[in-house]
Length: 187
Image (cartoon, rainbow, N blue to C red; front, top):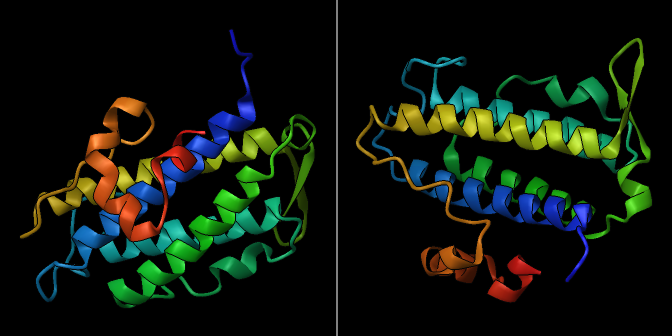
């Protein structure tokens, strides 16, 4: 019987996050003109605004977990990307940074303190708590984009078939596009 490894859980969540973003952004790439920025019903009023929010928050937290001091500079531009293609490229980069961070996790690193620069103060949190918060944030807002896609010409993609081994049959295309092998995802 193997022992529980919390770092493995966070590694899998990081890969799941990248796969879900990959699938969702590929769906958004085939939206008809105007649908990306069209008003929708959600916390943020469009797919564009929601996806831009996801990436700026990712920049903030990933930088903090890497030991950086980017802080609120991550939010200087509310919508840094006007098109799906450039947003997809930037999201893939921050997703890879998160994967790399999670690949390097140790039990000690998981309970280490992360400094999040919030303007006039520095928020101190445990790494595992920041990771849990970030994955929840991403899932929450991806779900909103998923729901908004239902009102467009593009069917919302399946986003919850990544974590378990039995779902390998559904993710082969994306793994090939990302240059990953199934063994990497399931380690």
